[in-house]
Length: 87
Image 1 (cartoon, rainbow, N blue to C red):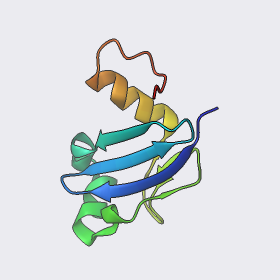
Image 2 (cartoon, rainbow, N blue to C red):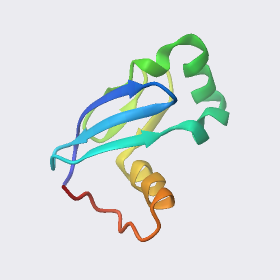
Image 3 (tube, rainbow, N blue to C red):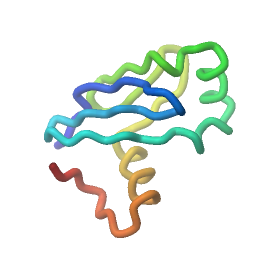
Image 4 (cartoon, rainbow, N blue to C red):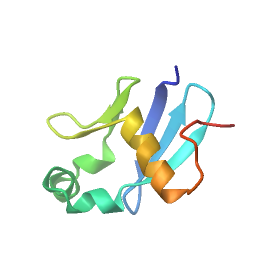
């Protein structure tokens, strides 16, 4: 099963995500900024300090995004995306 190896926050609500398969993804969190938990991350600067436990991206004392949710976001952005990661 694919795991999240590394994540880093970039400008403009983007996350740089590296998976154990070697795939790299830039994930736009702009749509999530309307949610109170994510808006709070942006307001207090915690958005730029994401962590991962391999199965999700999280912010201490804040929200998290699972691999499943990441795949759903990517599928919505890329019609025809089958939910797998390819190099």
